Amino acid sequence: MSITESAKVAIPEPRKISTVPRFSDRVFRVVVFCGGLSALIILAAIAIFLGIRGFSILSQTGLRFVTQYEWYSAINTDGTAGEEGSTFGIGAMLIGTIITALIAVVIGVPIAVASALFLNFYAPNSLRGFLVAVIDLMAAFPSILFGLWAFNILMPSGEYWAKILHKYLGFVPFFDVSAPVFTRSPFIAGIVLAIMIIPIVTSVSREVFSQTPLDRIQAAYALGATKWTMIKAVVLPFGSSGIVGGAMLGLGRAMGETVAVFTVLNIVFQANFQVLLGAGGNVASLIILKFGEASIEEINALMAAGLILFLLTLLINMAADLIVNRSSRKGR
Amino acid sequence: MSDQVKPTSLASIAGNRVSRTPGSAPLGTGLETRNLHAWFGKNHVLADISLDFASGTVTALIGPSGCGKSTFIRTLNRMHEFIPTAAMAGEVLLDGKDIYAAGVDVTKIRLKVGMVFQKPNPFPSMTIGENVLSGLRLAQLKQSNKEELLEECLKRAGLWNEVKDRLNAHGGSLSGGQQQRLCIARSLAVKPDVLLMDEPCSALDPGSTLRIEETIRELSKTMTIIIVTHNMQQAARISDYTAFFLADGHPGEMVEVGPTSEIFARPKDQRTENYVTGRFG
Image (cartoon, rainbow over all chains, first blue to last red; front, side):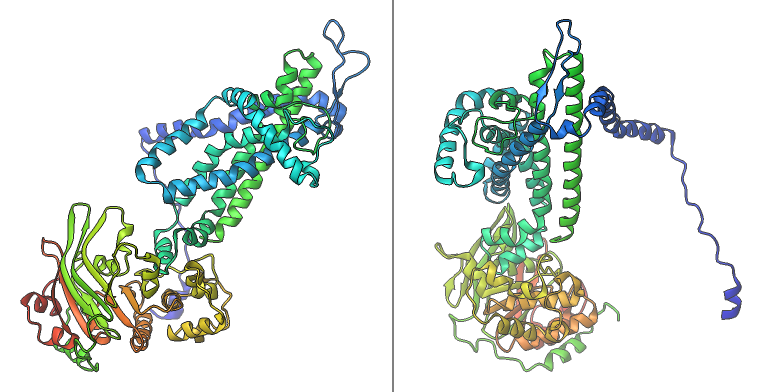
């Protein structure tokens, strides 16, 4: 066949490739499909519920709901909304939430990364298994117990550290205090949260570190690397995305944590950037603080606050995904 | 090309090399192993290997897969001990000193005895230049004229002309053969006396293989090279000495060692002859 002849042959459309799954496979497919969708459905249901309940408040107050610091519920004796009119603003609570969560990440992530490195590269086998079990247990520990322990044991010593920080770093605006009140501060709440996020950050980092390609580790050792220089040159660049991802998961967890923070934090409806001062805010704690004796109107406002917290967490997780995807291309 | 290796052709390739006489270097220099054994758990993989590698020679280690060549080469710079159950007995002497002696800093041993692996493994987070100089950082060595060292290492590895204009590109942007030469340059930067090469060409195409062989030939003027290879033409082309390893249901042992031309032309052991003539393995 000549070239000209073959050129005349029409190029066919690509065929559709398909297969008929067996009955059992189809059943299984439906089952896992439902499982996979359940997370989405539950999350959507919660968001819709919060949205509907919070809508009236949000449409009344608009943007002031997140910028205003006051939270005042006017209630008549019969439990209906009062005539004076209520003010609902979670600005102070949002600021407080972000500050305590950031403190938790700043304290917790380095400890978690160090412990992940220790477990993967330094711990003897026998100790490793035991420590991993302990850290997993820590993740499953009821948060009220963290709260109680922190209130009774951690707070007194936390105050002591806070005073030292204030004494030597008081010139930094964050470490200044306008009044010498060091109990129930965002700093102490941040320490409690740091302890609570260590397990998740440790296990995420550990997972990533353990996937470091062996040939790169060996290449480093063959060049006369010490364990630490090897970790710096090979493991940390490879695992950076995992550390960021773990930190973001920790941040999300720290922002949503309720009971432990409520136990140790003094909720004050003012924007406070002095982390050592015993006055802070926290959206989740606000909800638990007000929920018990709230009017219907206030409950709706709390739902709106919940919705905002939900959106904030969503935003952070999306940012985490973005960072992980971007940084994972480098160093791999 | 058929897999069948013709003994005559191999011997003639080997004969083209100016062979150095065994034992020309005094004892106590270069690298020596004495009654070396190795285990993985209870599995005895190497038995009683005593071999000398005189300074400035190229020695090829040949033998069928699983005969312990790679394990042997990894005992020479103490990479063996990274496998959790690994154990060894006997001695490895570098310039007369036992590298397994108590109190030896293993990182210093690995600076003197460098290693190039089967699969090219540049550090992907580093540029080409950073890769070459990475050993300085990893071993915490001081170096004043880094530019010079960089150029020298890349030239010795035969890569300079190809990368001199893109030293800031990432190592992963190079071809497989170039990456392997980059890895060679990287091991040269810490100035080792001995270079171990564990099948450095097995993942490369014939053209790249030839380039690496040229590099090895250049390097052999200034350092001791020990290379594991499955390619017998390669062994014949580049090595002064060849050692034949075999594990025939027992722990791996060294059957025969000698000048490469002898091993290929007049092996003393029947098993060596069977192997180099392609009758098994």
